[in-house]
Image 1 (cartoon, helix red, strand yellow):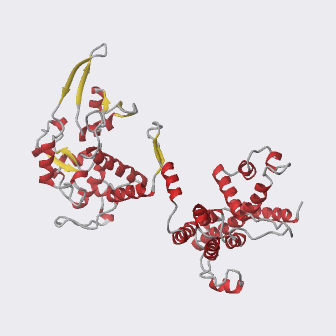
Image 2 (tube, rainbow, N blue to C red):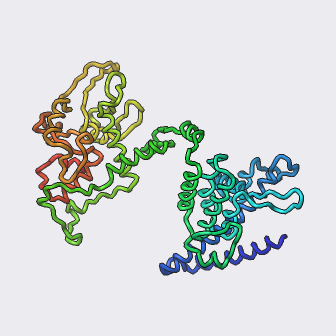
Image 3 (cartoon, rainbow, N blue to C red):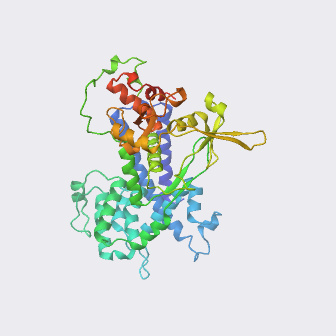
Length: 468
């Protein structure tokens, strides 16, 4: 066994002893904040050291897997690619194995034909930071990937300068006056906190933007071909959405989500009746106790639903089958009345709870279709449940945006609701109609009403609807 392997075996045994003792004696839960932070720092330092060894080992694996080798290491272990071999030996997933192989190709050093010694790597300063344990696989990928994507548009001298700045930044050094001079004492004096992979990537992208100001038109076309959005099948009550957005599309979506989720800093002019209640005075049955417990991702889902509803009501959307794109949900009359059972989304065939159909019917309309015993349509009925265009414009002119005090959602993003619900005999009349936010946001609307201490009878049916 080689000396390096013997030393690593000794380190592994020492680490096993420390870890076993820590878990057996339940040491970690009783550590102080400072000790926990120092433990994480030490673990990160050891992890980067191990990743540096893995990268250098993967360099040799990649070289010995080339077709020119008769005794390829991949074939010796029954693997087809270096990534497969790494997965088998290190028990990592496919993504981590591919990243290791990718980083190893960047850190690879050629041998001199005449002398047989190693020549400098393509990114010598970043490799030096890797050897010092200051940067791991994530940092190298974040720093080098933007440079590699620019390809030949960055000159070799400019690439060396970018490597010099990234290497110094990766080691926590503010500035390096000469890339060929490495003064350890000077480096230690100028050393600062080590950057995260995200910070390295930010500097790398800034350097690429400076060195390659014309941009990468071929990469832009490749990104355009890569864009896509797919909607999967219903699975355990939800439908998965996957895809890759172009940067400008993602930016627009984030702005729309922020417009829905971010709190408005400008308050309404009339703040009469607004007051604060100490949290220790709240009763369990108080409306203020019902805080918005949605997670960030759940809020984004609901905001996305509101955006889709607003887009479906927009006059700028193209027609589908001669009419506006309308969500149709079918449900049995008995299930609709009881609130139990299942409803069906007609364009997808997915089954949803009947209560969701009731929520959809609150903002839309209901059409009754009767079938005979043979499945033929025997009757089609319509109701004046939904407000027509003239009524909607009149209510918008009267109410403006959302009628919930303190809510600044514009009128085009609101829905027309019955103050007294149609199911309880409420008429589809402008006197019985009002604008408020989407059904998905009723709970949040109730929270706003509670904070403003408005009497519930002001908007009786909206506050009660939030509990459904």
